[in-house]
Image (tube, rainbow, N blue to C red; front, side):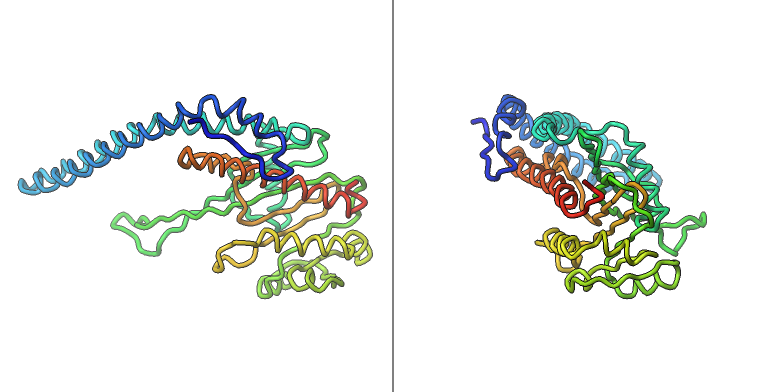
Amino acid sequence: MTISFKEQADHERGFSALWDRHVAPDFNVYRETFYKIRRKGRATMLVGVVATIAAFLFFGRFGPAIFLFPIVAVAAFFFTLRSYAPLFRAQKEMSEKFLTALNEHFSDRVVPLKRRSAMQDIFDELADEGMAPRDPAIIGASYGAIDSEFVFFNATVKRETTSMTRDENDQPNNRTFTYQHFLVVQMRLDTNCSTPIRVTPDSKLGNMFTKLTKDWSRVEMDNAAFEKNFEVYCDDVGVAKAVFTEAVQGAFASMREYYSRNRPRLKGKLRIHCLIKAEHMTLIFDDLDDVSGAKLTGRTPEKLVDAAHAGLARMAETIKIVDTYRDLIPILR
């Protein structure tokens, strides 16, 4: 039975027809392929594990022959990975069909951007301003407004951590990788901002470090919820308060609460930075990834509908952010 998409919110209106056109016709074949290949892959993995253990026990009886054991282990891993290759291709194809439907759904507002170098330039500029890490970023989903007035994209920073202990060749013997995800939303200003305005999360110790190391002037704001959670830095108090009116401060506080819902307690509230400089206002959301929901399509076929709901909500909410600040900040209109 072909799985259907049932619209549940205003931002999903009309998507069911696109789902029926792009996704539904190939869903049954995809589901059959998915489970068939997964069963085969698991069987191959089991055989590989058994063969690896048997090789270890067998070669271990012959002294130096134990060095043949890694060859068996590598071969088992290769054949297991090869058995899953058709599944990865099928998932990629279905993800592309979903993205075709999603992109068409939002085509009256945004289009996907292929030139990732421009997004990398934006991220590098944010790093120069102290608003993002200086590490190289991997650019993910990228979209631009059809009127060229805003862009938004995902960026992922990969960091390597090595242990202090070293092997006989003086090389670190323990390497781990961490990934930091960002959603960046950049809007074009109608009038250039005469002096930069920086907004950072109020992290107490972090802001004390900022005051000691950067020549930024702190501006006190009036909204209690905003002032409790954000710090504003600008050399011109009048400019900062003209842009960050009571309504804008309230929108920032509400935005933080909205994106902090259902986050693991250990992660704390979502961190949001903002830079207004020259002709752009840029919002940087820490720990927000996969704005289109494309990565979620790699789950089981039955989860494809959930991925679609998530992707539509994320895209619609990002566009809503732009519309909200366009209404509230005159120089964005």
